[in-house]
Length: 94
Image 1 (tube, rainbow, N blue to C red):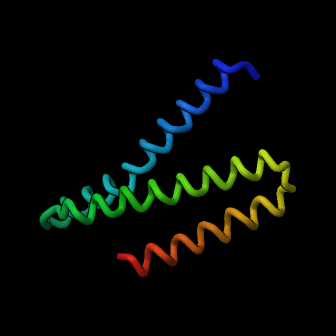
Image 2 (spheres, rainbow, N blue to C red):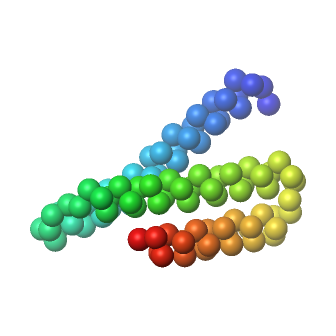
């Protein structure tokens, strides 16, 4: 794989992660507007930052799995345990 192709792939992945971080906040904003309640910027920021942290951690774990040539079962086990652990941590943080 050429350097330009790898750099382009990283940029596309970063752009996809940043767009995906906005989806839960947009969903919550749409829900609040549909119910006629006030938008809470702090809540929208918390969901956006929470998803950003989760996706960044999962991306780093997946890249590590690929770099170490782990089996599919080990990679799934690692990412699933990481996702559950971060989900529980975010639950206690919020």
